[in-house]
Image (cartoon, rainbow, N blue to C red; front, side):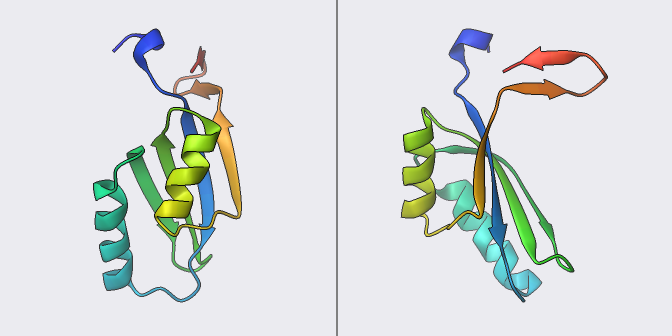
Length: 92
């Protein structure tokens, strides 16, 4: 996939409270199955009670709409513009 073919990438932070692992598993399955965004990764910290979702969407409005439709209220939403996996910076 070329740089021009990729959709913008977003990361959202969500509060989980005391969500047990079976409920988190169900939430992950639903999140990956939802249409409107391409979910890349879901990460959670049980002690912190927080979840990060990394996903692609056509625009910030589309990202917010997908989150609202999935009933995922983010504490914050960030568009990812740069990424580094090895010390070199890549434009996204």
